[in-house]
Amino acid sequence: MDRRSVHSESKEGIKTGLASMPHLPLLMPDLQLVRLDHASAILAFERENRAYFAASVPDRGDEFFAEFDTRLAQLLEWQAAGTDYFHLLIDEDGKVLGRVNLVEVADGSAELGYRIAQKAAGQGLATAAVHKARELATTEYKLTRLRARVTLDNPASRKVLEHNGFVAIGELTLNGKPAMSYIYEPR
Image 1 (cartoon, rainbow, N blue to C red):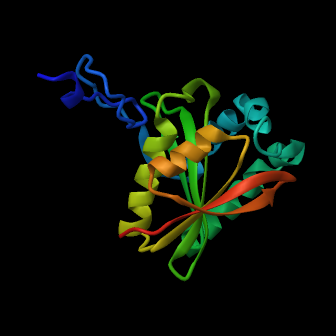
Image 2 (image 1 turned 30 degrees about the vertical axis):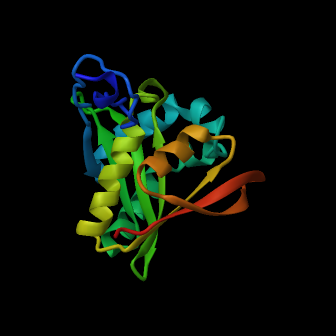
C-alpha cells in the first residue's frame, strides 16, 4: 500500500498524512445538561481552573464564587425557559472536564461558548464537545445558526471552531483584544 493512500488522524480529526498505528477513538466524556446536583462539581471545576481560564478570558471574580448558588439557580431558570442550554463534560468519576454553553437562544440562533479544564486541554475534548453540542443544537434544540467569538491570541479555540464547520465572518474587539466572529449554519 502506498504511504500517500494511508492517512491517520490526530485526536482533533486532522489528517496527518502518515501511516501509523490504528487510531483508537477518543473516549468522549458524557455531555450532560446542567442540573442542580452538579453544583459542587461545577464549583470545583471553576475553582481548580480559575487561573488557567483567566489567562485567556476575563476572570469571573470573587463575587462569582461567593454567589455561586444564586447564579446557578438563575442559569437553571434560563435553561428551563429555553433561552440558554448549559452542558457539562463529565468523566467516569463524576468530575467536570469542561463546559459547553448555548446562550441567547432566539429565532433559531444561539451563541456558543466553551471551556475545558487545564488537565484535559490538548486531548481533543473541546473539538468533540463542540461537535456534540452542535448536533444537539440542530436535532434537540432546533437551532439553525450558531455564533461564536474568540480572541486572536487563542489559536486553539479558533481551530476547534474551524474543525467544526464554523466560518470566520468578521473581526471585532472582545474584552479589549482583537477577536474574530464565527458562524455555523448546518447544511
